[in-house]
Each structure stands twice: as C-alpha cells, then as structure tokens.
Length: 232
Image (cartoon, rainbow, N blue to C red; front, side, top):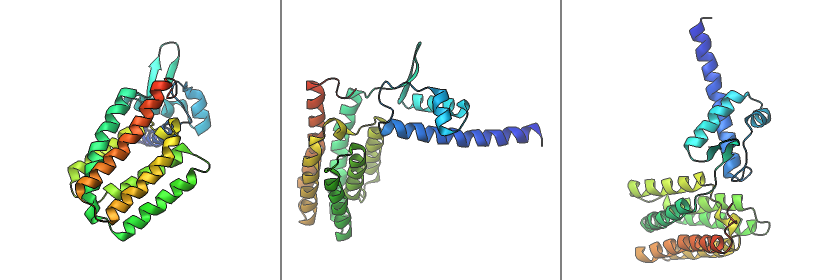
C-alpha cells in the first residue's frame, strides 16, 4: 500500500471518529449533561468514547467555532455559558417568523396533522408528571413543527428553521429554568389547535402563536432577572 493510500485511509477513519466525537460531545452539551463552565478534559472524553485524543480535539475545535465551547488560559476547554442577549434576540425573531409561518400553514393543516399535534401535546402533558425539561423541549419542537411545516413561503420557513437551530446551539431548554411555564404552554397549544380547527382568520392565529412564544420568553426573563444565577 502506498503512503498516499495510507493517508487517505487514516484520514477517512479520523474523519469518522471526529464526527462521532463531535456528535457525542455536542449532544451532551445540548442535553445539559455538560453544563456551562464544565471543563472538557480531552483525555477523559476520549476514554469515555473509546477513541484517541486526536478526533476529540478536532471535535472541540468545531464546537468552539460554533460558540458552544471556549478556551480559557490555565483552564483549557470549557462549555460556554448561555448568552442571554442572543437568547432574547433569537426568541423575539422566532416569535415573529414562526407566528407568520403558523398563520400561513393553518389553511393547509388537515385533520391528520391536528391529531398528530394533539397526540404530541398529550405526551407533553404526561411529561409534566415526572418533568423532564429536555424531553419536553424536544416534544415542544415536534408539536410546533406540525403547525409551521406546511408554510408555503420557503423563505419564512427557512428563517423558522434557523431560529430553532439557534435555540439548539444555545442549549435552550427554557423549561429547565421556568418549569412552571410548561403547564401553561400545553394549555396554549390546545388553544392554538382549536383556533386552527375552527378556521380562525390568519391574524388571530398569528397573534396567538406570537403571544405563546413571547410568554415563554417573558417567563424566562422574569426568572433570570429575579435569580441571575438560574441560567448559569
């Protein structure tokens, strides 16, 4: 085998392991297993994942570029904190574009879609019994995707997807900080479904969807204002 062939083979394996390490570490950050400020010890992560330090180092560099990880002198790699300003801007933007997408989708949402969204909302209601904020957040996205994915305007839909992806990169499980908001959120979901079922006008649906998103933001801001360390 030539040196070139060896290099390609090694590079392919490294790329695969690097991708696996990246996915694993990012998942732990997003799910909250690695909290803001958590020190990422490369050797320990590599041991846990059963790989060498090299792909882990590459994964950490990617996560640093995404803003999920930062390097501190005499400390090394740590999980970045949640930027409250970025969260505020993301939620404000999402309330506008998702509200519009939901209103535009409403005439195209059929009975099967309503049934699917309602089933997800019931799962969310059951989740309240033994509250799991990460699962609740995932179900919340599933619910809303049913309502906005039929949006016929691809530009608005792209902005909605970007907003949700930005929330994921911010590791935003808002309900972790304001679990009481989860109960109201489930009730508001049902109200949204009833508006769509009753063929309410677009302005009414858009306003309800925007108010729903804004209420979650307001609850989060109120919590972090009264208890600044809650999101740390």
